[in-house]
Image (cartoon, rainbow, N blue to C red; front, top):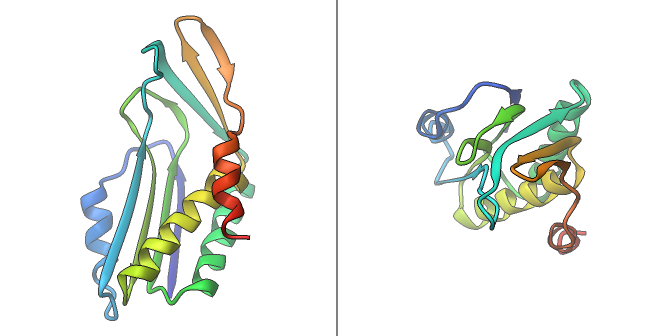
Amino acid sequence: MSIFIAVQRDDFCVASEYDELRCHAACGAVVIFSGLVRELSNNSLHSMTLEHYPGMTEQALSAIAEQAQQRWQLGAVKIIHRVGTLKPNAQIVMVGIASAHRAAAFAACEFIMDYLKNRAPFWKKEHTAEGDYWVEAKASDKQALARWE
């Protein structure tokens, strides 16, 4: 079992990350989620700035990955999250899971994203035509997390 955590400004290549995940000997499934900065419904988003608390953020992501490995038999967990200012359609996060079986890989990927959205110390500020504002937690994200607790 291996865990890889990266919080970075640089973009990442999903294909390269996939190639690394599929090399685990017991791997029968790889599930990857890649999240993007999306436009707002009124198309006014210019960019989004993500801030984090260095050290604390990596610890929180590691703890989430360890919880997933305790729930499911996983070969590898990879979490990459970008920080800094990102434009619409930029990659923002990737969660990759290698497991012997697809059910565990899918479940672990969803689990990690639900916990990440609620428990990881990231702060998002959207820059729009109407002004800048901090993004607040969504009730739907809290509901998604509740199914795991």
